[in-house]
Amino acid sequence: MISQSVMRSFLSTCLAGLTLFVFLVSCSGDDDTPQEINCEQEAARVQIEDDNDLGGMTVQFEVQYSGDLPIASVNWDFGDGTKGSGNSVSHLYVNSGTYSVQALVVLNLGGAECIADPETTVTIQ
Image (spheres, helix red, strand yellow):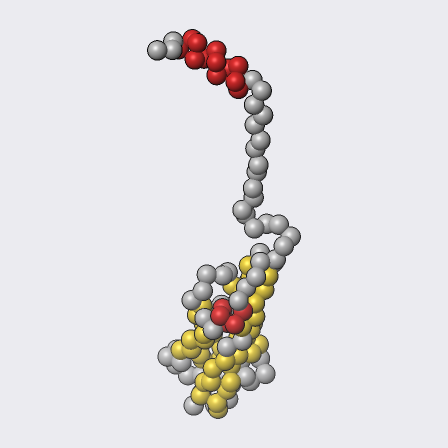
């Protein structure tokens, strides 16, 4: 059986010539290389929900997104010549009629962007 002092002496002699290499790898995604986004797949996960239960001519609109990317911005075209921004907005229509409402939704991942433009129709009476 080898004594502990002999074993320590042996290890320190063997390890004296050993060079240790350390590699640091960054996984934060903060480098300058944009990541790829499957825009077709992500755009299919964006929908508009509308709620006309507020009464009168006011409609609540909200973007519903079932993906994992952060929403960078949402810009609305309410179909009556007015625009808005934000994930959830309410809009007062001045005249009755049928309006085509579109949201321009920008999804972002590490400098790469994907734009979805879902559309819905609302009828105001």
